[in-house]
Image (cartoon, rainbow, N blue to C red; front, side, top):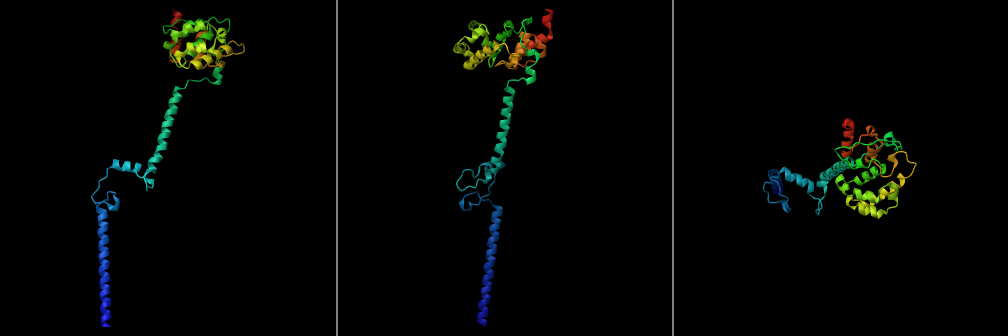
Length: 265
């Protein structure tokens, strides 16, 4: 019995010693994890202290595990969530730019304003010459020409239109003649202005409708926007005081009329 009790006592001591060694090993392991940071290599790395900058951590949080074998892809969720918001801002900025570039439009009520009424045969308005020398100043006697000049100036400048204007009105002196001119001839003559086919087609279409007797306002003619309608009111009907042009050159002439210096002269 004494021998059995002694063996049992020795076994308990042995178990206690093993348990103490295990606890000591765990404590040392925890201390190592606390004092050192693994460098990410398989097997735990070599245990050197690792200093990670904020910029590196930012890059890691954005790109780690994206597209890599075995990666979860969870680290890129914050970055991907910000991309739609950035794209949304870019789309809004692009929409604002397009809105600023878009040509001003007349409302339905403005289109029926008396400023844009068809010119009557007894209208004696003669627009004065200005120091700005707009192309329309020399062609006020034919409203069709004023409208066509505005079409030629669309997406171009006076410096581009001026060299071909005499040749154009030699080929197309009035609306009736223009309806009989081949569209390709007009396109070739205006090719230096760009959009030659579209421009020629619109000029032909305008000429056909212009010759009809049933239109009441110039704003209802095809291809006539605010710019051409304002030019019509300023140079053809004399209703310049009822419009506020937005085209920079037309605004200069409108300011010239508004100041009234031409009346004194």
